Length: 78
Length: 231
Picture (cartoon, rainbow over the protein chains, first blue to last red):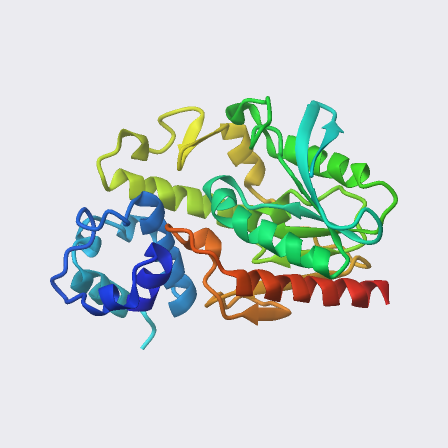
């Protein structure tokens, strides 16, 4: 997940390493505009080999780093 | 050098690179914002291809770049006609299509000796990205996040005609028997490919970063592929 955010948002490795579960994302990271949200979701699909339905996408899953990780973990094949 | 080509609906700009003789590649960029994100890599790649003795042409499509056609009036059919006209404008040199992402849907009619496709995608995949983008825009309570509520549709700052979107349904990248085709993908893309290069796809980067190493790797790949086609 850190790799996805670093690649899509162009964030430094140090910056993404500092993310914790309660680090706010959507609305707090200026880099995370709608184009970037779409990019993060598509990159997650590619990397995890999953399909994310657009009606699963809501503000809540993007609220914090922890919520995004939890969403991706739930979708990823065991 | 800035050159031009004429297509049935007018005249568009075309950047030219490399030698005036020998093989030449005709580039079809991805759509909309992805074109902006990819252009610098493509220009660097075409400069490296020139070092290999291969020419390059990077045309604007109707409604993009310097074009006098309004963006919202452009159709996929026009882009395909423009691509064919640009290929014709290269004269009798051996021409190869180098198409990226949705650009592979534009590269349809041109009399080309082969196709080199970077991360080709179907029209369905483009539409899925559009819907996703609009869903993401809707998260902000953005008025343009509503589907079908406006026409033309605004996609990351580009006004796109509903016609254009309708033309994407069922569109597939060019792949015909007897015409050499090579597929290259980047990063974690798991779709079938002749080669997958470990690099961050520039079209997905919100903040563009130069990647001269990737430009050189792609130019090398294209040069070797063209050499094998000409063999």
